[in-house]
Image 1 (cartoon, rainbow, N blue to C red):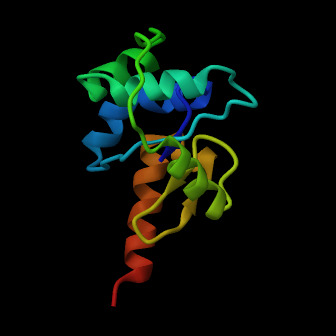
Image 2 (image 1 turned 90 degrees about the vertical axis):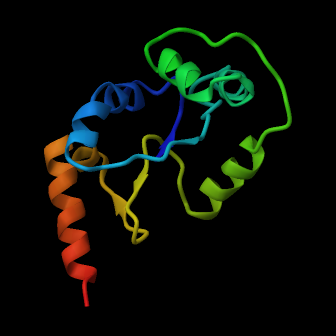
Length: 126
């Protein structure tokens, strides 16, 4: 999932991560700061990437805590280029294992997302 640390919908999604996991859904987050909408999200994303414990820092940031400033070599420019090449211009953007973009209104509900992922898996089964 492409996510922006200051995106309110991304935060709402992350608040439900235990419910997604309970459905057997694993989520890989890709930092995609939308600095045009959220000035400073790029610095927060860099601080998360450069922290000693990325997961804890990400979780804290999604709960509203600003990460301690940090810089290091990071893939944020490449991730932004990847998002652009895939036509992604907003967050949250969830892409299923088969490459299908899942509509945000489906992705925001653990039950609906589980059903959609099951449907996509069944449709691609041989």
